[in-house]
Image (cartoon, rainbow, N blue to C red; front, side):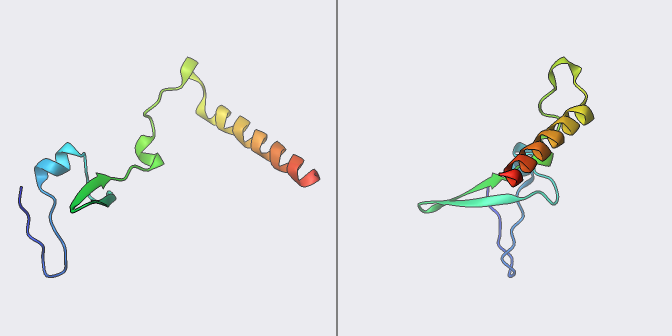
Length: 82
């Protein structure tokens, strides 16, 4: 697949590649140099992974988040007391 670099150094990623990598507008990509090749990799953020894993036992997310915050607060308080 060929693409042309503009005078501003921009290139349009062909539709077939965007679809195959599930790239959308505003997505981030990483260019990795491997010898004399450049590999284009989609960058995934935590937001991209949201909902990828279902909680076991139908847990309540807000409840779990609250427990995690309390555990972190207790650990910080313990460290400060030392």
